[in-house]
Length: 283
Image (cartoon, rainbow, N blue to C red; front, top):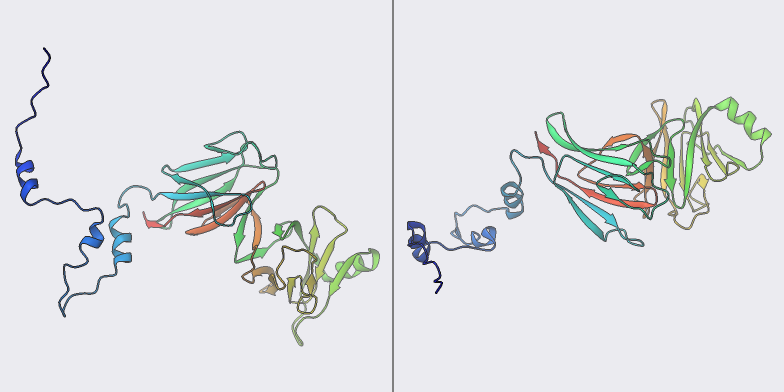
């Protein structure tokens, strides 16, 4: 007849546990009542938690949210526990086969050391339709592509005289000269060309202008239901153009080849949008 093996004799740890050792579910909360006297030091438990639960030697984990359709916040949560994560339609650690606008191997997220800190970098892998990141502010270089509302635009920088001649020769090109009184002229006029319809062109020669759906407040007026009334500001300063988001609902998205991501970032591959969260840490 088989007999169950007898349990091992109690150890010193077992004896200690029976009398003194208690396990707790939340050690931070359990320690909240340790010092309650008038001279007790006030503890910021949010700061303490961030310090206690942060890695000291390994790479910091990142969190990627593959956003659900029709949602700006909900989606599939993926925790990145290695140095790189590749994304594509048919190749990579994360594949989204249903998105035909995404390339087979589209982009990669990689944790690197940057000036003494661990940071995450997003790099396009030569995709056809590009990698776009949501920005608060970004320089506008010739050929750069933007996502604004439901449309994609290409930035063209032209010498001011060249633009004036172009306006005389083509229809559908709107020129705005409503810069601030006394403002210096710009050496390059800014053109936004709709990549789906090259006849849809918006040109700005003044050193600043608002872009949006409100014709009373904006120099560049675009009829798009997904643009705010005042969506973004276009500014020419120190010899170059830049775009500044005006806390718009749907944001300003810029095509990039490779970019460092902030702790909280959003990007788009094909028609799929992602939210990204990764704390930086000293390397």
